[in-house]
Image (cartoon, rainbow, N blue to C red; front, side):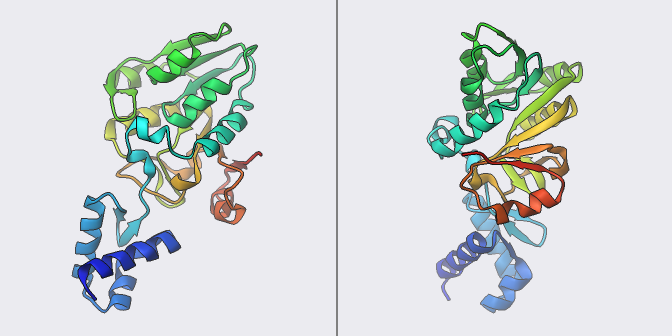
Length: 252
């Protein structure tokens, strides 16, 4: 089997099974584990998978630019946003993480809602600027341009003095074993501080982000109180998350 054929085979197995193990691939392809590891390394460098100990997992589409991500799964994101917006109660303090799905949540918050929204996302702050009854608190820091969020010690220190009712977390990658992960270390630290500063954490994830992994782990899956995803996602695929104690929300 040619190298290109072997690597295509690996990707097909990965997309079917959601993960691959180096030892199993070595046996099936009748090549050494060193060869498999080299294949996985080069596929990871091409952004086609995420290497983990002993094999590889799917990579998240959230590694694309903010503008490109706005074009991905718009109907899913709108459905998720509508469900998530209903979880906000009058008078609450809400941490609204950056992301294209959380931006949709900002657009779907009721016009008569009285609440305080704390965000590190300039697009979300701008979206809520015309909302008469929502107080907006913008976290400072260095702008991470790929995700359009503020990161760094300034944002983290501000979050340490906040005790929010809920945090709506924009999910880059979610996996039952790896946990919540992202592609940028600074963003991982900010998300972790958001989780620590909220009584309940709501993860927002399109189907393409489920069972994927990125380089930097934010927290375990159990950090989530709720997982809001699209109504089109198969409930069997979500069973592992539900078994870990997360409340799954899917609404048409």
